[in-house]
Image 1 (tube, rainbow, N blue to C red):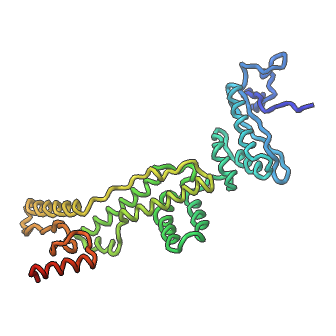
Image 2 (cartoon, rainbow, N blue to C red; image 1 turned 180 degrees about the vertical axis):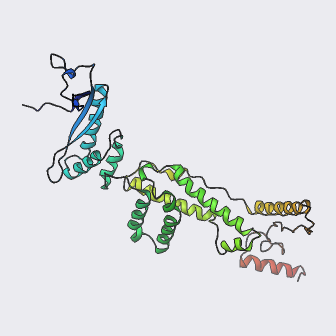
Image 3 (cartoon, rainbow, N blue to C red; image 1 turned 60 degrees about the vertical axis):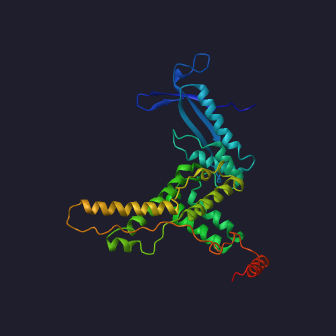
Length: 326
């Protein structure tokens, strides 16, 4: 005879004379014919979990569902999570540990996320932190990359990603988290440039020998996180999409724009000093060099912009001698 399914039951908040809850034994929960009374109590979910390693029985319970349909949907979701482990009893116990660790009112873990962790062979009872994953990813790549590339990856993880997003769960990593990393780099670059232009020598000494992270370096930093997250998708199957592909880096001014801005700042500083009325002579405006096109080899000799071959150069020299040119 099959065992009755007691996964969906009812309970109420009625109290005994000693102030204790009556619970599932309240006579008002059922009608005279034994069916549930729809006007009294709330629905309860109860699912049998795999026993612990030492054989201890355990159950997963949730209370307070006003509709039976809601309780059934929740029970089915719990059973689907347990079914992801298949016949692997060890994995089923780990999924049960994950469910047992949830607090009352806390939502169930995402089914797809748990499935990805099971397929990847990683722990299902905890979120993978981004910092831990990046370290594990780099360790797995050491034998496949050159020492210089490994050193660059290690610097990028240690200096930029670990301080900013190291504590963010990998499954919850979004584009704005990675964008904050590059915003912090830009803010630090601005601090370095401002300190270099400071009139206080002590402030200038604080950034002596410190270089801003240039545009090319930021592209390499972006390539590091993009590659790591691509492997998390294709190899480890921990995430579904790569949030690093939508990162926008700050556009750096061209050399001509930088020189024009420097000249504008010099003129503004000169006029500002003249208008302060502090009696100081601002002096002449500092001359700012303007960009000129670089003379390519052969311009002054009238040759074409491309580099002539030795044979062509020899023919040109012999023709010039016949014309009486030196």
